[in-house]
Image (cartoon, rainbow, N blue to C red; front, side, top):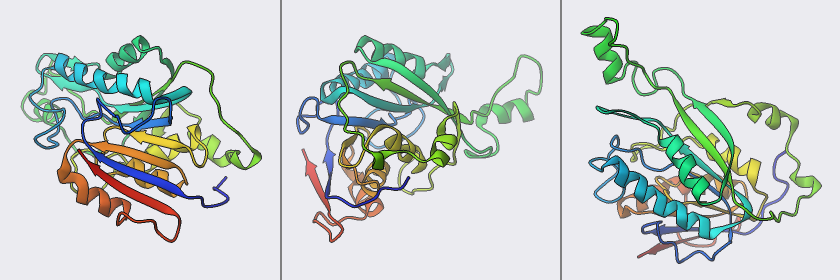
Length: 273
């Protein structure tokens, strides 16, 4: 069911490290939708997580952000984390399993695991390992894969959830039939200027499933601002953190703002630490 009316919403971009979010009051966030940087795979800029970082250090840095998410989350509300499996010369790294462990230690309940199935050929018809298997080592014990899936992990915070559900918040039968499967077949984003943005449909589904109009959505790894753009269109408030100031103009363009209150009741603001 589409939203019935437009309300005033605010959208804040904070340029800073999301392992410390003093701009957000404790217990004030109703939903987190995010995708942490890939480990040792993508180049995001001079700051932040990613290449040339030991896996244990990568997990430690992710854990710091998740601890801060714990502080800002409202009781009983949800966190959705999109992650992929990482491959290294030492073998595959089960980032999804490690995040489940960290969230469990923070007293979040692991509620859902959704598989994001990407179209074949999304990252090129063949990845490097599969190309080697096909072209130079097409023999037993040299098997390699083109990875075409990621995980969307859903966690619920401890405590009693407070949400004022009304008839206008009812989800449509069409939407429920579309999302009530453990595998979501979705394309990828074609946004320019960032190595790994997720498509609008991913946060759109999650935001519809776990919030109502006027609530606050947080993305601690803001990237190109996809979560903010989608939250704005769904009449939710949003806060995103992005550690690399080089993405400011990309985010502003993708979200479509000029730091003012627009005629349609949307207020944008930027804070640079």
